Image (cartoon, rainbow over all chains, first blue to last red; front, side, top):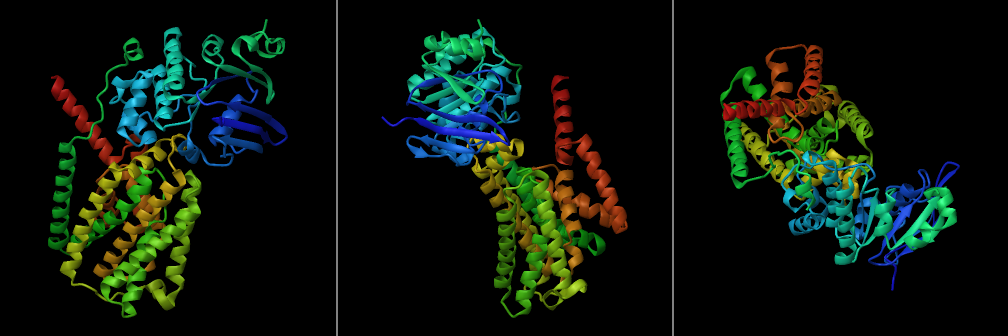
Length: 230
Length: 326
């Protein structure tokens, strides 16, 4: 089966600093990949390259076997790569429906996406009037409304309490199970991520330190030493 | 469901009803009729000012697309205005029939707009403004120095292609049609994309908006309006000169959009009334009027970010809500 997303030797250098250094990984369709690592390990830079926010210095990004390495973000969205941001970025003055319609170009897609993430009754509300957790769900719904093959979630649970995090957990699982979409999640909340992801990639200083099932990675001495702690 | 866990404070939803759309078209019809009455019935200075306001409002309607909806400060609108005026007049002087000359004037402006769009649509913020300012300055130099075609600093006479009553009707009608087109653009997918660029260009790009292409189309639309306004001005005036299309005029057009309120339907009219009307009717010296307009612009930007229309709406809303609660 063709991988949903494949990274081959992906590298990003800022001057002499290699923020991401020769990263290769493969994500199968309908797979949730957790990406963890200390601050500055290159997780967000990696997402930025996949989404087209940054152009890689080297390497290749294949989406469904097709090279999309240097495409601008809007073309990548059209091809099937959607993302959310680490900080909440929404069209505050717009209604939820208007925000989702911008991504989906169809009312039905907007409604489906909103209902999927549990904000179906907020379609006519201004995004800026919603709570922080709801605004983060709007970001997820916006990504979903663009009919993606791969969704990149950059710290989606930031600022959420336990109940909200559990809701997000169900939402992301639903994205995988009901839509067959692959998801890459960058997250520091280990309770959330370890129970959500099918596999985990640990990054440190721009390189992959460890890869495997959550229970395997959690007990990897190198990961414990570099990130998880004793 | 999460929404029941975290109920936010209630706000009124934004909803476009058929009634509000119909109301806008009635307003446009009324404005068009009043414009026709003003340009045909007012005499002397007042008549001239009314015509200038209406012609500027047509050009400003185009600017309201790129600057008002898209949030991109274009300082090239006076150049498009001038290109339409000069190209149509030069074609007319060469013996081309009026309607072909008029179409030629608009197409010349569209060609210039396409050039600006291709070169500057990938730039952002102040770089876009600087680029369009530079284009406007170059056009002013061409209008002034290419005297073989343009008549130089003293300008050139324009052959009349249609009787003055028809020109006046065309001015009022063009304003009405322009406002309808703007309204349709504002409610279209293209308009939503422009508003998204204005709100957060990076976010817009990441939800699938082709930002550079959308801005480029907006500039070309803007040039189309500017070119047609130039054709009408040349036809009314009977003479055109570079001083009518300088980059200072382009800056005043930018100011007019800010004064009226970015992206609002009647911004071109309100901006035109303040920028053209007040400075002409108060008989301020050119330098003084520009300083006064600059001060008005700064005060409005600081105190009423939504422009005069946004401020009036806010006052009306607060009065209405006070009445409703009393």
